[in-house]
Length: 130
Image (cartoon, rainbow, N blue to C red):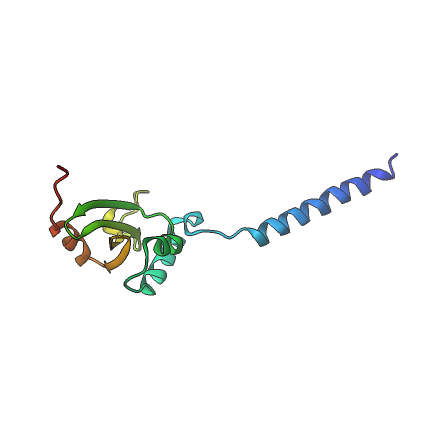
């Protein structure tokens, strides 16, 4: 009876190692899985590679969830202003808009990013809901 214990324990351990190896191989981490410092650096790198005209879905797949989102309907379509953390200002355990880079979408297409996009978004008049 005692002779089987090491074999059983060894088999369970090998099975666990195989499970861990398969899980690590098949799991693809997303930007949302990263800590704030890694995600901030990742966002900086990926935003530098963006091109105008990318779809909202493409950008969301690339960057993950936005830290802040604002939206409105206008005469020229639906606008979304999405903020992604790209730099650190204060060690307060909170991400603020001034620590983010804004990306502006019109009808689900990337049309601008950077500080000027906030003013562009704010100056676009709303369409009356009535």
